[in-house]
Length: 434
Ligand SMILES: [Ca+2]
Ligand SMILES: [Ca+2]
Ligand SMILES: [Ca+2]
Image 1 (cartoon, rainbow, N blue to C red):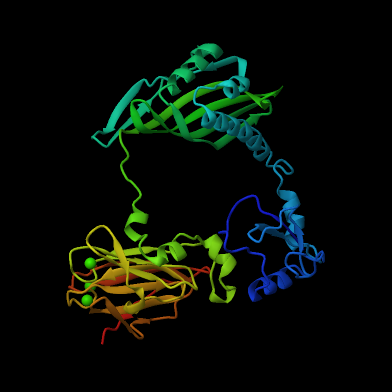
Image 2 (spheres, rainbow, N blue to C red):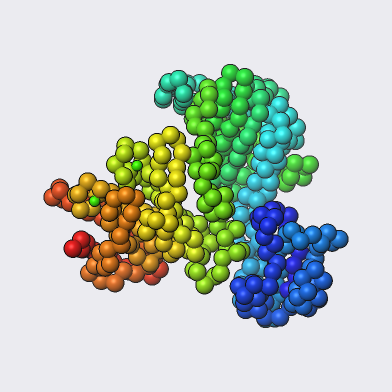
């Protein structure tokens, strides 16, 4: 087993993941049957070799590279997944064209006015359709957001240089591009020397006349084999198909999370960390998983007219209840509320289940729901066995929705368990409030 310095900072400086905790010890011993046993001087722990160069700071970052004693059963399969090694040869073509598209993306992110990457990829006998919209239909207008749907001329009327000039012109309104994504969504390789691809593009940037503009659309592109600086394919045809162009003239949303929640210690100590972090410091016995799919519920628990906030957290961390102070900030009242449960929680719902005017809290743990009755004063009481299932539910609870579907005046709940096995049946549940 070898540890090497990580290139990305996943951990805060106060937590070096290389420690001799029970969790780390068990993981390493179980996964890496045996290891390269080189004493780690800074750790004084003989199971690890530190591939860390000369910097042995206590805050160093490392990655774990276990060497397994036996070959992983997946290894033989993984050797076969390299694109082009089987009859699905278009996977290889895709990767080669994707590399060209990635070069375009990288170039545009550097500068929206540098087209060398495009020029390299376009063949001398290229022809393309005009990139000026033939029609531009207004979908939505308003002071905040304006959306147009654009259509383009069919047919390749422009030679290489005029086309590249139009491409420059089409992107000239951007002073900076922050997103440039090009995805091959279909590929046709009927002729071995010609490839036809459909490419979905998304460009987002800022400009002098707008705050943000997003363009999402499709291009049909035809490529021919070549041995060029740009790759094994050169672009012969380019047909613009459709485009949705959205502009905002000022920021629509601004992030005020720190202002709203930052006065609570739980904000910095719990909410600012992601699942990657908690996976490294929480004991695996808590049941923390890798997904980090934990929802948020909003409801007015004290009927003061201001919505309060319940934040679901991964297993091992207490869910948190924040009470709205009415001045744009929230106060963490988890400790006295009775709803700081530690189990992995997919989502939660506030709803007045018993029609007494107070919002109850339904907490959807991955292994089943809980009902907390609202007793007022920011306090909740769990109702044991509130949900009775006609059959034991199978799978992991991932979501829930609530509505009075039969209009009898009582709210009904739909739970959404993700089946672990096929052939599962819908969950039938009855609710007990007594
Ligand atoms: Ca409230
Ligand atoms: Ca109620
Ligand atoms: Ca009902």
